[in-house]
Amino acid sequence: MGEIAERYRRRADAFEQKVAAVAPDQWENQSPCAKWTARDVVEHVVTMHGVMLTPVFRKLEPADDPLSAFQEARAAIEDVLDDPIAALTESDTPGGRMTVEQHIDQVVSDDLVLHGWDLARATDQDETIEPVDIERLWATAVTIPPDLMAKYRMPGAFGEGIEVYGAEVPVAPDAPLQDRLLGLLGRQP
Image 1 (cartoon, rainbow, N blue to C red):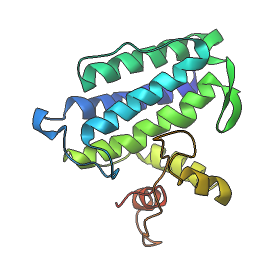
Image 2: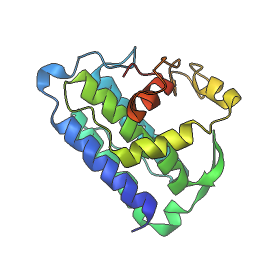
Image 3: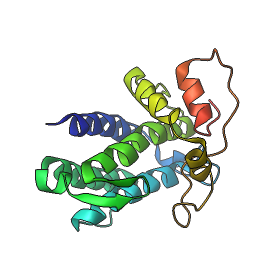
Image 4: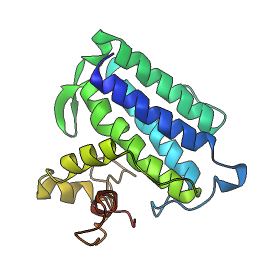
């Protein structure tokens, strides 16, 4: 198993545990994403998994509940990552031409970390992000050119209803790296 597939599986395990721990009366709780409930966060993650399948002509089937939906989406992504032909298929993305595997790593794998925090915050779960993920996302985020970051913060820039990051939230420069990452990506730590 390659590094991208391993990273995805580790992050998917953590996200799935959070989804499984949501109590039935918590699904409508407000998330840190202004327009989304806890349920909306999971629906977004599942939808983005479906987007990653498009270049390899696969799609997700509807599921009855958030946990089943995520489990099916996860299984579909893992199938792609385990198939060298599918994983290495190239396609055009908002970030440029890249393999499906790279796109999964840069989008849904990273989404699992950030939206895992959103879901944890919305449902009173442990909000701690793995240090290795904080460091990786921070290293990526601080190298995003200002013009591209501005586009990421613009609602609808990558399609109707798509917001990549919210406006930066000021955080003390000596705050823990997790808090600085969350603030940079538009979350109130």
